[in-house]
Image (cartoon, rainbow, N blue to C red):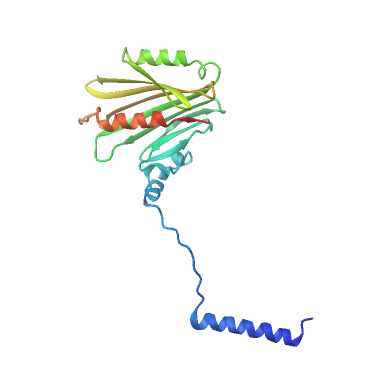
Length: 222
């Protein structure tokens, strides 16, 4: 059992502490981290506010207008525009196949972006790059296909501009293949066109090409 002298000492110390709090308050320094305006903008973006889209997304500190999309298969990741949403049509089979479609509209403009990404991890479609490129070539109707490489992938890009019932479409096609994982490939298709078909739009706007090139070049296989 504590001695009477020890108890009085503890009680006295508590009284001094309480008195200091009551008279002068208790000063505690907290480090408050300022919110990064760029990060805050991305967290409050249309994409992050959409429940279906947000589950695939994370903030990319290097980008102003793009988030990072991580595939439901975990097989790849790519950039994702902050105003885009994942459409209701979404298909996934284990870790071997995924198809995701995305749309967004450039603000204050009658310009719609649509993109369709199909991912394969298989010895047939995923590994047969020649077949995928040949299939893309038929859709391009003779338009030139360009081939590029970087450290992790090789990719083929083709572009086609045409009118469909007087509505302009700027089409982009790509086949993206992993150098490290030989069975992994992506078929990518997208276009820029008029959001409201009864109104005019500039489907050849530089923003369309810039967006698709940025997405295609951003693919990383995991």
